[in-house]
Figure (tube, helix red, strand yellow):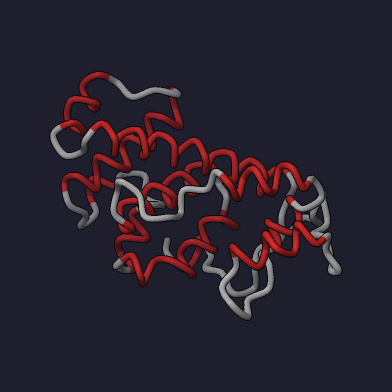
Length: 184
C-alpha cells in the first residue's frame, strides 16, 4: 500500500471540525481517515458534510447503496467502497452476491432486479460518458421518477468526488472495512 499523500489529521481538532465529526460519526466510532484527511481543508470537509446524500432521500437505502458501491467500484476507490459495504450493506439488505455485482464487468448476470441492473448501467454510462443515453434514460423512466433520477445522478457525481479524494490523496484503507478481493 502506498503511503498517504495527505496524512489524516490527528486530534485535538478545531472545535468546528470536532463538532462536525460528532454529528456525522456513530457514537463511539472515531472519525474516518477520509474525514480526517479532508479536515486539512475545513471548508471542503464542512461543505462535503453539508452536501452529503446519506439522509432519507427519493431512492431507497438499497438503491442508494448500489449506486454508491458501483460508483466507487468503477472509480477504483476500495476505501469508500469498503466503508460502505461494512457500514451500510446489511441495513440496505444487500447480499454478498448483490455486493459482488457492483464489482462485476457484467452486472446484468447478477441476481438483481431489473430496476437495480438499470441503476448500475446508469452509473456505468455516467462514469464513461458523463451522460446517460436516450435508450437507457427511457428504461430508467419506467422505474424511477424525475426526482429519483436526479438523486441517482447526484449520488454518482458525489461519489466520484469522494473517490477522487480517496484515490488521489491515497487515503489508507480502514482496518475494519471490506476489501474488493472478498467479493470478487
